[in-house]
Structure formats: C-alpha cells, structure tokens
Length: 432
Image (cartoon, rainbow, N blue to C red; front, side, top):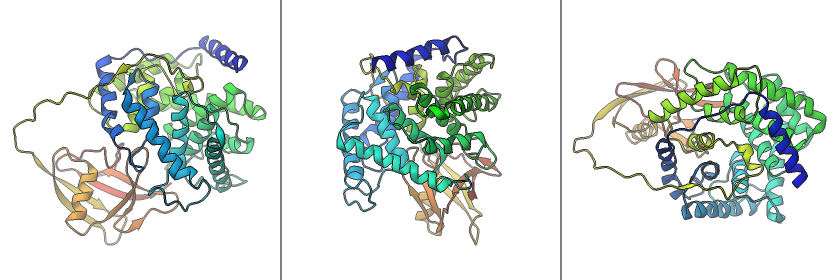
C-alpha cells in the first residue's frame, strides 16, 4: 500500500507545478449555516429518505454532527443489508419497501470510504458484484456499436465507476470504454445542452482510474478525456461565474480542483465561481441536501477523490442546530400559482391558492386534493422525482421537465422550488 500511496502523492506534486483551482476560505458562519441545513435530514432514516451523500459531504467537510453522524451511518448499513444483501440479485425483497438505486448504492460505497472502511468480507463482495453487474447491464444497453443508451444515465454510470475505484476495485476495459466513447462523442448531452454534472462526475472517475493506473491500455484516451472535460467545463462558465448553473458548479469545482492544468485560466475561473457561489449561498439558493453535500467538500478544499486516502482523524467543528427566532405575528400570505400541463389530452390548466413560501410539491398536493389532477413520484438522492402526471407515465428516455412560463427551465426539483405569486408553472413531458 505504501508504494502506491507514494506514487499517488508524487502525481499530486507534479500536478502542483501546473495552475491550480484554489477556492479561498469562505466565512465560517456561512459554511456552518449550510451544514445546519443537513441536520434535520439526518433525522429522516426511512429507506425512502436515507441519503448517503449527506454523510459523505459532512465527512469531507470541516463540520461534524457527532453521535447523530454515527447513527446515520449505522442506519445506512442496516438499510443496505436489508434491501441489497438480503437478495443481491433478485427483485423480490420483502425486507424493504423501496430498493435503493444503483446510484444510491454507489454513494453508499463512497460513504464507507468516508469512514475509512474498505469493502471486505462476503457481504462487501456482494455489494461490489451488484454494482459491477449494474455496469455490465448498462454496457449492454449502450450496445456494441454505441447506438443505445444506459437505462439510467451516464452520470450514474460514472458515479459507479468512481465508487468502485476509490475502493480499489477494477472494472473491465469494455465498461470504461463505453464512458470514454460517450465523452468523446457527446453521447450524454441532453436536449442539445452540455450536462456539466455528468462531465464532472466522469472526469472524477477518469482521474481516479488514472491515479491507480487502472485500465493501462486505455490510459492515453483517459488522459485525453480528462483534458477534454476540463476544456468543456471551463467553456460552460457563465458570465456570473457558474459552471453550467449554480447547482452544477460544486461538482465541476471538485473536478477542476483535482485536475491542475497550465495555460487555461483555471485559477481565475475558479475564483470567479467561488464569488458566484458565495452570492448564491447568501441568497439561500442551497437548500437541497445533495447539492449541499457536493458543495461542503469544495469549501473545505476536498473532493470525492480524497476518499482514496481519507483523513478520518482530521478535526471538525461540531454542528449545533440553528437557533430559531420568534415567529412573526402576522397572518400568512396566500398566493396564486397556475399549474399547466400541455403534454396530455385534454390539456390541464388550473390556478391554485397556496400559502407563500410553499414548495412546488405543495402546489401539486393541493391540486390533487381539490380534484382533477394526479401525479406520482419516486425518491431519489436529490429529492422526489416526478414519474407520472395526470396518469401519463414517463417512458424510456423521457422526463417531466419543470418550467416557469413561458419557457424557463427550473433548476430545482419539486420539493425545493418555491413559486412566487402569479407564476405559471408548466410540467412538460420531454425526451432526451
């Protein structure tokens, strides 16, 4: 192990000769408020709400939740033993109501490394086998000639490779080759738009493979892919400083922090992104636990690649729940939000009265309770995901897009977006 660690450290020293992506220290109180947003989520330990990314984000940050953190990891382990190890290769499982997705399993493997645990024993081998089986199944869906697509997404495909890599588990050249081809030929682009999140996650996976010198026959393509991804992400920076959008910026920064380069304006781009992030944090843009868990490591100069050799003894400040101020003594404001669905026949359009500050999910619930509207969701790491609207289920390579009228896509999900008075929100079924 020591020679390998020395080799990886040497590669880091050589990378330091190039221009670095450095994120200057941010106000500690601002960072603490971000961490406090995660505390209530750590009390939600049902199978549907457990989120390994919360644990990973805290362990890679300067903050800790004490015994609550330990209990959360314990709950994650119990859940995965019941829902995955109980019947590792069967869909028939009576021990849990919602079986974790492959992306959830990959995040769980990252959570184990965040606690300095390597996968071992027969149970651990079954988890590894399940994730490798998922990648093989996705590889088959993509097809020999790359004419197909993953059942899930290239984001989950990349996350799974990364999770196995930080546990020093190899995957076959053919699996890595599919991701390389997708990056080289932009097969992951959705509706003509670059997915910065997918690019960054693929880049982190490639850097991990490169550091371990896994898949040596593919190493020239892996090196080129890392450079290509860096170039694409830098070109995707907006005038405000975000890479793609504010919610894809943390993961993009994780990748850029781990891939030094010279002559590309990397340092300046990262400083600009940091300034935009600070403005967004101060404005309350970060409420979603997955987004916060990807941001906290960046603010502590960490990335998912630090899970290769995590420092589990590093001091971290104890998080305390935010102090609640006195409730203002005034009547809650009622606002009107118009809900529109044109992707069904007959089209649906209804104005809903709701309390100010309610989420879009609250609007959907109110519309359903008043009759004439139905919807369905499934849990995901980033919150409830719309699977059906007015009886119309999403098909293969389809999703329900959220838009603010007339045609502005929402960056947040139904649980996070807070409509304003008089807004019209459209749910549109689109293909990708």
